[in-house]
Length: 215
Image (tube, rainbow, N blue to C red):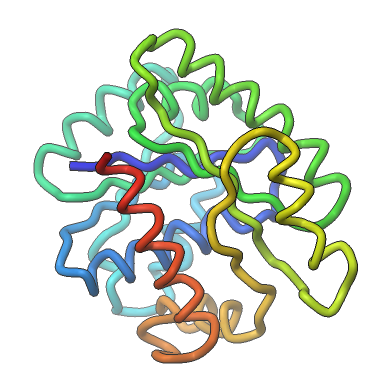
């Protein structure tokens, strides 16, 4: 079992779309997956409700309660599946911290905006705090360049900017219309546009993520 938390202190960096599409890629790898939607806005659940694909069978909403209850719930849920993906809210650091306290790997998505980079520092500090508390080199922490436009200087330089912050950088996810179209249909990119550039990007990210989470 691997528990992966997607954490960010700022909205709009692609946490939910990364979580949902990673689930599809893990499913394609033959792994059983559970998505825990811990964001009070329940973006993952709303996405799943638009269609009858993988997400409609894989998303479990967490109603707002004591943050420490999330830790127990994720551990319990994880006993029945190979991979648990936890989508955390941007404005509730306590919830994100509890997810990091139980995760094998924390993914920190970051867009190319300077504002995204500013917020990333807070998310990194939170993940490092959880790691120090656990004292067992968990969670592992990785950056994910997200919503990247490679025809801009900010997009081209994002991975380099992230590397300077001291953690390894995983494969990038581009800003692509097909991702939004898949969400609108209630499907993942793999279901909506298999073999598209976006789907290939998510597949590469999933391979890298799973390898790290299971070390």
